[in-house]
Image (tube, rainbow, N blue to C red; front, top):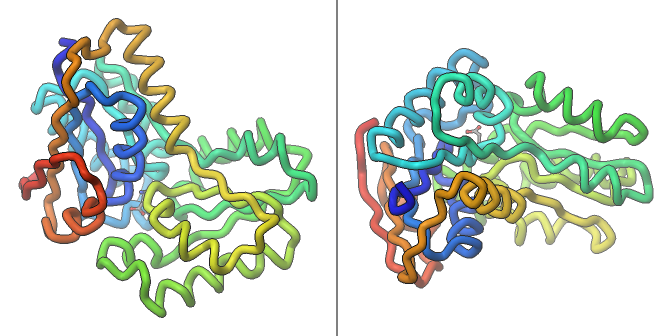
Length: 262
Ligand code: DGL
């Protein structure tokens, strides 16, 4: 079982930001990534739809013989991970907006969270927010259109800049000193966001924490791949292969990127 791959899925190409962290933290692990770009964005969908899509992706990863599933999507985690964990035997790792470290470190007592509507309206997000941020002001902003722009390969467009400015400027005016990126697509926007954000505002995303947690869970379950070679990295998209290839183009390792109907 140790040689089996880690399965990773997202509504699209954004979760590759999590794959990257996993490949750094666990260089000997094989990974299989599913980009459900055909059904992106999940953020606008109902909870039931997000659960159904998460089940579909999980079943495909299990069919591909994965030993553990990383839900590399805040929207899918916050809406579906409970159902996934109660339906399948493999371990699941999820990702949620990293409110806790921001709440602990903020001096202005004001923290911004940029995420999808599906994440911000979920019960799990409300619970996490209540638990860790009850003495601070959390300014929640829905990043409408950001995922679509990234999926269309328009990261450096005027449209993207205008959207980001309209979401981030009001948070700056409210004196946030931490901005939590609550969507796995958004790490790809960090250079764009830094052009808008003043230097004293710290950006937080959860990619590294997810990779650390994946390593811890593999270790506890005796599932770490003991191979000394670098893992193999397979990516499947049910939409345009070029978009996925493009977002992964700066990786030096050899990647296998294919179309798959799922
Ligand atoms: N990457 C997903 C997330 O982390 C994007 C969700 C969407 O497709 O709207 O939430």
